[in-house]
Image (cartoon, rainbow, N blue to C red; front, side, top):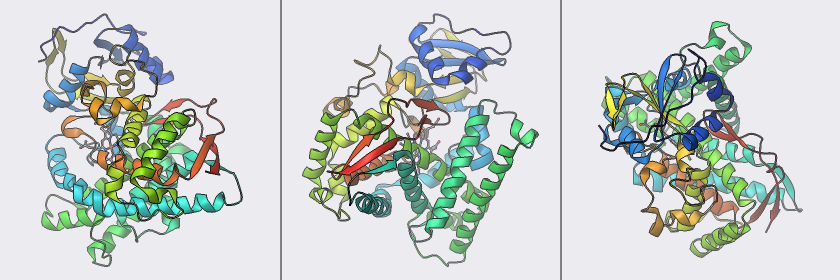
Amino acid sequence: MTKKNYTMTGGPEGPPIFGMIAAAKNDPLGFSMENALRYGDIIPFQMIGRKLIQVNHPELVRYVLMENHKNYNKSKAYIRFESAIGKGLFTSNGEKWRQDRQKIQPMFKREQIEGYYFTVINEVSEKFKQRWLTLTEKGRTELDITFEMSMMTVEIVLKIIFGKDNLDEKTVASLHYSYSVLIEYLKITRMLPKVDLGKVFCTPRYLQFKKELANVDAIIGKLRAEYQEGELQDKYNMLALLTEAQKQDPQHFSDQDIRDHAATMVFAGFETTSILMQWMWYILDTRPDVEDKLRSEIITHAPCAATQDSSALTYDAINKMDYLLAATKETMRLYPPIWISSREAIEEDNFGDFKVDPGTIIVLPQIALHRHPKWWDAPNAFIPERFLPENEAKIDTGIYFPFSHGSRKCSGYKLAEMEAKIIFTKLLPLFKVKALNSIANSPDPGVTLKLKKSLLAEITRI
Ligand code: HEM
């Protein structure tokens, strides 16, 4: 039980039975942000007979995600994801999740991040940089930044998971396409987690989803078999580590578990990181002052970044770039790639005087707390300085949680931060990225907070 007496000034009310389903479906972002501004700390409402509470106070965010997390499972909204990624860390609960997390978290330990994962990101981003250099050799060029960031992050995450020398370009492109189809399908069906109407009516979209899922499974299956038979030597990618974990504990880690964990990592790590970078380019387009500061910090710590070949970049140099890290954090404050999370109460609980019934869905909208004027000065302004080391400690963890908090905090957050820093280090000192369609753009809230339209830009050498 939390101690405080929270404010509760009612919540939105819709038609009987349906409740707020239409409002939340038609304008999900507006719905949660307006609730946060209009009502108190606890915002109850209902949807198709289900009780929900949107929490609107940092203490309650911390309570649900950290202090009393054992009473809050991932909600049913995550079940729909199982059709694509099975029971990996993202979707499972209870003892299975606890045991799996214990086995998988060491795959994100420092040596892995600074070693194999750094090497993969450095190599892939250098390849993209060389391509941009060639494209701009004769002057300006137009690029679809959304596609560029998406292709780069998918190649990175696939090589981290399946091995840097085990995937040809065709397989990367094929998995990129398959995952894009899976994510789009989940976006459409996630509001009704119990009934997949696409499946019931065997719609063309569902059939396409099944086809792409089969493609993902076939590729993972082939690589896994090659590891099991000892044909692949690379020891540090995640599939190799998962296969090793299976050898140590075959009873606990089945072939299906390995497939689900590998599929989950691609799903959790690809679009999220790509979106972070797309939003950062979008913001920097109107902030040449921030761009200048970033370029100067990057070149101070990594002089090679100003040259044609920056493959000699080191982890230590990246680690010193506080302003760059702060800019990525501030981007995720304004545009959290995962903009909403939810949990389900297992047993009865209390938020202060407010009773929480078992089965109640607790809605934790990152976007609403990240921009709430009660907790932030100039909430809609882009001010990276908020996240410089001397200021960051003053920020309440309950108003900023792009990677969530507590025992279910994103497994890959350090990896994602490093990836964004390396990519900007490679590209920012050499290129000016001038957006061509920023004004027409806006957030598109689905599973993740995408840009409504692909970000097109004119690229020139600096
Ligand atoms: C900017 C990039 C990323 C963002 C914003 C992000 C955000 C998040 C959030 C908010 C959660 C918690 C969801 C919830 O509990 O409701 C989560 C979980 C998770 N993320 Fe990330 N993520 C990012 C990148 C990555 C990467 C690169 C990986 C791995 C390759 C990854 C792997 C995971 C996994 C496995 C979980 C489930 C953890 C668990 O429940 O034990 N994420 N992420």
